[in-house]
Structure formats: C-alpha cells, structure tokens
Amino acid sequence: MKPSSGRVLYKGEDITGLPAYRIARLGIGYVPERGGIFRSLTVRENIELALSSSKFGRDRIREVVKLFKILEERENQIARTLSGGEQKMLSIAMAVLIADELMVLDEPSSGLAPVMRRKLVDTFKRVEKELGISLIVVEQDPTVILETADTVHVMEMGSIVKSGRAQDVIKPEVLKEHYLGA
Image (cartoon, rainbow, N blue to C red; front, side, top):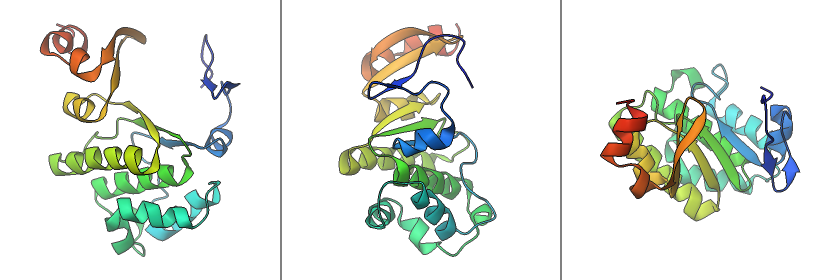
C-alpha cells in the first residue's frame, strides 16, 4: 500500500511504494501474520523458492537448518500438512534466507501455542545473535515483546504514543492505558 504521507528509507534509499519483490532483493525479509508459504509445495520446495530470491548461496540453507531443525526432518512434507507453529517457522526460515540485515515480522506469535511461542522467542534471539539480522516485530503479546525487544514503540490508532526500552515501556500502567484502552 502506498502511504498517505511520509517515506520509508532503507540504507538511505527511498523504498516507499516499491513492489515486494524489489524490497526482498534489497535483503529485507518479511514474515506476514498469516501465510507466507506455498502450502501446496514441500518444505524443501518452499526453501528453494526463497533461496531463488536471495543474494545468498546454498551455504545459507545450512545456517537456516541449524535454526530450524524440524524443517530438515520435514523437508519432503507438503507445507499445508505442517502444524501452525511449523508453518510459521517455515515462513520465518524463508525470510531468513532472504534477509541480509533486516527482517519485518507481523504478529509472529498470533495463533501459536505457548510452547511454540517460546521456540519463536528463542529463534528470534538466535537470528539476531548468530546471523546479525535486526528484527522489526509488530506484536501484541507483551511477553513476546519483553523477551525479544530492545526498543518498543506503542501505537494507538496509527500514531506512536510511547517509545523507549522494552522494560520501561511494557509496564502494567502503560499496557492498561494504551494496549487495553483503559
């Protein structure tokens, strides 16, 4: 969507309104809230497709498999038959294959069981530490935010109403006022 005002800059380049494939070629990985995978293809085929849009070579697959062991075990499985959490992991793995320095994730914990949320948080930490990829995460679960974010921006009706370090912003009174609307 084209913004009604403002610009989006990445490394000093205006990427406002660029098509998704051009943004991916800049090395920005994206994980949508729902989907992000080709459900009728196998796990391996999804990985191969993501790699075809990547500036990285096959060695990047080895790094991704270290992060997502389950995907190696399920490489010949049709993506739609994976659990919701496994599908989310596949979507994240595909974004990691594309991401050079930045990944944007939309509601990554949405619909996941607590055990999968825990794995997700651990994966985020490893992606940042082991691959040096920064994450922009749009998330409503305060637990996930506290465990993964350095800096938090609380939005209300499209405007940033509070910013700061996660532990300073994600406090009961801030959540009550802005997150819960009380």
